[in-house]
Image (tube, rainbow, N blue to C red; front, side):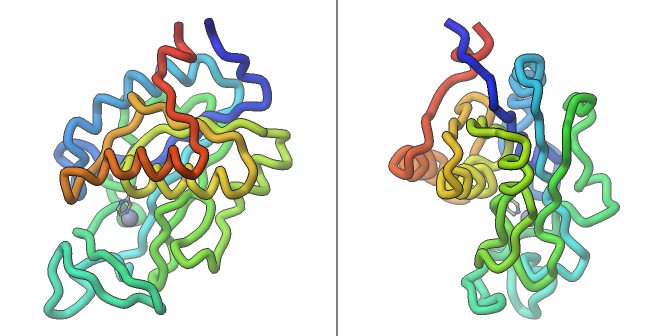
Length: 211
Ligand code: VGL
Ligand code: ZN
C-alpha cells in the first residue's frame, strides 16, 4: 500500500559527480541510487537537494594541511576533522549534480561546506552547529512534517542530515535503497543505519513509496 505523502519532502543529499564512480571521493556503486531517486521524485510534490560546495582552501582537504594525508585527522576550529581528498570544489565539474539526476521539480538547493573553517556533513547545520543553512526553517515554513532522506554518503552526509532532521522534530525516514555508504571502514554503513534507527529515523525501502 502506498504511503500518504501529504506534508512530505524528498531530500536528495549530495548526488554530485565527486561522490559517484570516477569522482574524487567516489562511493562504490553510488550511481545505483540515481534511478531509484528519479523514480521517487515522481511521487513527491516537494523536493529539495543539498550540495557539498567547498572553496579551494577548505579545511577538510588533506592537501591544505602540510604533511597530512587523506585519512589523517586534524583539529579544525576546535573540532576533530577527518581529512578528505579535494572534492566538490565550487565551480568544478565534481561539484555538479550527476547529469542523469532529474532536477526539474526541485524547490530549492541548499549548499553546505562553504566556510573554509568548518565542515558540514548535515544539510541543516555545520559540524559544530555554529551555522545554520536555513533548510530547517525553510521546510517548517512550507508546512513540511515528514522528511524522506536519500543520497550520498549514507555514513556521512546522509546520516548527519537524518539525525538533524529528527532533532528538529521532523518525522524522518531513510530510504535505504536510495543511499550508499562510502565505508572508509567496511562497517560504517551498517553502523550508520543502527545509529539513525536508535535516534528515531524510520528505515524503509523505496518500494514502500513506489509500489
Ligand atoms: C561527504 C565527506 C566529505 C558526503 C561530504 O556528502 O557524505 N562526505 N564531504
Ligand atoms: Zn565535503
